[in-house]
Length: 503
Image 1 (cartoon, helix red, strand yellow):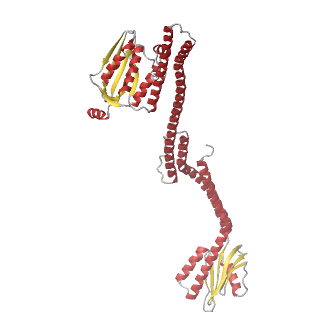
Image 2 (cartoon, rainbow, N blue to C red):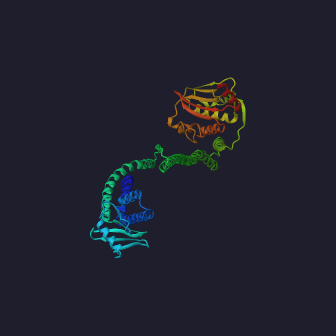
């Protein structure tokens, strides 16, 4: 930190203290002497009033003591002369005053020689207040001569030493100011450490917040502006943490959306490529055999002509089958297909599908076992569920080992869902492919799939059907093969009964 706030704070306060001391010294140099002079004049004027009052009312011991105290306090000398042979002159004076010069100036005034004044401050019918330089004393005096009744008086105070006092005072202030500035600098430095500690603490907090560390908080208990700033920083930290968390979540969601969009685009391209590939072979066969018929290759052989026609019809059926399955899949995924919900016995459905699919065994030596209760009622679209089971069983027949075994199982789980599974012995599916077998046209063994005419969209249809039912489906590798499963949710009232029973 190049410019510490503590040093700035200390420097400002030290400069302010120095400036104050300097201003006091300058003020003394220019105004202290004038101020002392005005105070001297004021003291003389008060003494005039006191003397005139005593002359008019008469002298007493108390009055004399009061006058002597005033003279001693302000270094004032008083000389009073009563006119008349029966009256003796009375002089009230300060013990440290030179009365020789004062009496001579007073006698000169009484004999009418006038006043030798350097400056007259005030002149009335009863007195004259002036400034005069006393050459004998080598000092300037503030004096007042006047009359009160039958008395004449002179009051005088010396200005000697004022300049020296001012100079001495200024020197004292300078030395004291330097000492005070040095001592004050240390005090200000240590005090500024305490005053700036919360600011430095908040600076550290702000630095950590800038590094996205929002676990730090201002923990001060101050009730002033710094405390309010700390509380504001705490609120700002919480809001920033919340906002940044929301932004991170939004960014993560955006990244997922982008990834999903890219994946959808990739799947769309792959879908078009796979559709083109699946349709290319039957179209090529239809085109080839049609051209052969047109060219009259089989005109002389009815059996060959029938064979050509059978191939064309068979390939057209395959194309029609693929297109229908794609349309069904699209309707299922888009939610446009209406399900025919009904309650039926899934065990009976499994027996029917198992018997109808026995022909798929072909030359395989395969044993099929059904494990299901005598009656197991489910709530679903029977036609759609039959297609799910047919797809599972078709896969099992085509991938079962030779000799092999296929197990079909159905049961009701503790949570009320009905689970149907088809397991076959044979090769396992690579772990990396387990989540991808549900994608359209995805084939683990493309050569083997092509050999039995699979299109690669059967499992995609299974997933779409189960999603439309609100159920779930999955696949897992077993010790000796692969097992596909699906689960159907119970009917609403059945689910309520299952939950009550479990509670």
